Structure formats: structure tokens, C-alpha cells
Length: 317
Image 1 (cartoon, rainbow, N blue to C red):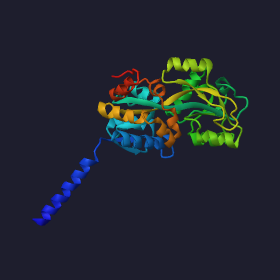
Image 2 (image 1 turned 90 degrees about the vertical axis):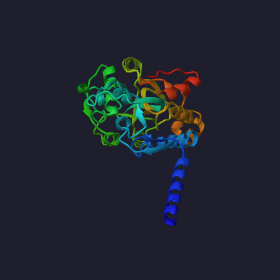
Image 3 (image 1 turned 180 degrees about the vertical axis):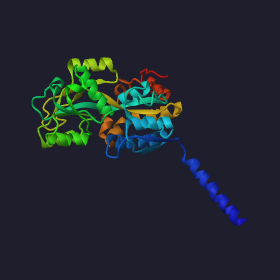
Image 4 (image 1 turned 120 degrees about the vertical axis):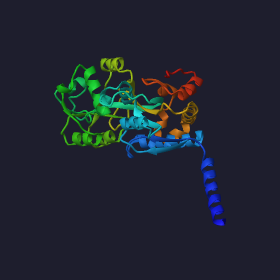
């Protein structure tokens, strides 16, 4: 009997500790461990835990598409994604054409710019039009980079057949440029991007602008694109600002998450921008405007409540 009572007391204490650990729990899908999604997701998760009492477990994944599928399957409650990829999921097109529409997630906020960066070492390439007939890396087939590159080419009046398309990752594109195997590459990431930094440091690589009519057509047909300026000095040898377009790294949440939880986690992030920036430089891009513009998927009611308190109305469903 004494042994039984001791076991019962121990179990009671364990349950009490679990109960007192408190707070909802959420799993956040991010990206590869060497990428920005994973590291930045860890920072955001810590601030949500400390300020909203929600325990966030950050896991490494294959990125945007995997995170949307993970939320749909109930494996994740939060995820970091490209704003264009979440639009494809919402509409059941492009990267989600086979799977069909996925609408079990909602927008929390745009986080930072993932610029469409066209990098080259060929001095004859000064505009997108100059890519015609050139060997150009446009990302892995079906990837976000691939569709971004196709959109840019289309806006410039070109097709995939007008270039010698190569389908390479960031790292492979950088190596191929250095080795002279390709003439240019599309890289979609928040600048400064390590692969481009290395290229510009070790060679005469530079960025080609994506602006004017091309940018206007892109934004007209694809509202998830917004204008972006990569400031002079971002990369070695970059003496002037470079205009381009961007999609956004975006935080999404399961549609089934409670309004109170999503309000609390949104508040935990945007009420602590300065501290987040001190922990990760990408925090400097957190703003109410960046959070709410260029989003084509409805916001979660909890996030909408927070932004409404700041005088910004966002669409919900």
C-alpha cells in the first residue's frame, strides 16, 4: 500500500507540473537548418513563448510547400512560407496543381522581403531582355524560384524556350556561374544572400534590375509581388541601388487555431520588433505595412484583431 501511495503521489506531482507548465503548444515548420527560415523561426518562437505563453517547437522542413502540407495534415500549426507559394496552394495551381487547393491555413503576417535577384558575371547582360539565348539557371522544376523566373520572363515577353534553361539550386547556380557554365541565375532570398555575397566578393558578379514595365506587369498579373530596392553596398561592388520585385517570407497558421492564441502570438511579435531585431537582423523588416501588404490569402481572425487595433483592416474568411 505504501508503495502504491508513493507511485500515486509521484504521478500526481508529474501531472501537476505538466499542468503548471501552461500555455498552448504549437509546432512551426520552417526550412533547412542552414537557412533563414529555421534560424529566424527559432527567434520568433522564443518571443512568442516568452510573451504569449505559447510553447513553439521549431522544426526543420523542406520549406514552403512542405509547411503548408504539414499544417493541412495537422502536423504543424505554424509555418514560414513564400507569399507566392501560399497563393498557389490557396488556388490549387502551379506547385499545387496535382494536390489541388489547400485552404486549411490563414495568414498571420508578412515578415521580410525575399527578393527576386538576377545575378550575372556577363557584362553584356544589363536587362532581363538580354537573357535571350543565354544559359540561365531558373531553379529546380516546380520550385518557387522556378515560377518566379517564369513570371519575370513572361513579363518581359519571353518564354522558357527563349533561354537555355538550367535547373539548379542556389549553391549549384553560384558554382556554375563561377565556373563559366551558365551566364546568369535567378536567386530568390532575402538580401544579402550568402551565395551572392560570395560571388560578388570572389568575382565581378552583379545584379540585373527587374523594374519598369516588367515590374508593373508582374504586379498587375500577380498581386503577391511588390516593388523592392536592394540598397547600394549590399554586395561588394554594388555602387547604386538595384530595383527589383519581391515576394515575402510569411508566417501562416492553422485555420483551426483559436483567435486568442493567434492574437497573442501576433502581439508578441509586433510589440517586440526592436528586441527581435537585436536577435536577428531580419527583424528590422518587421512593420505593420510589410505585415499586411501583398497578401492574397485571408488573415486569421486573431491576427486581424491585432492589426485592427493598429488601425489596419485586413481581409478574413
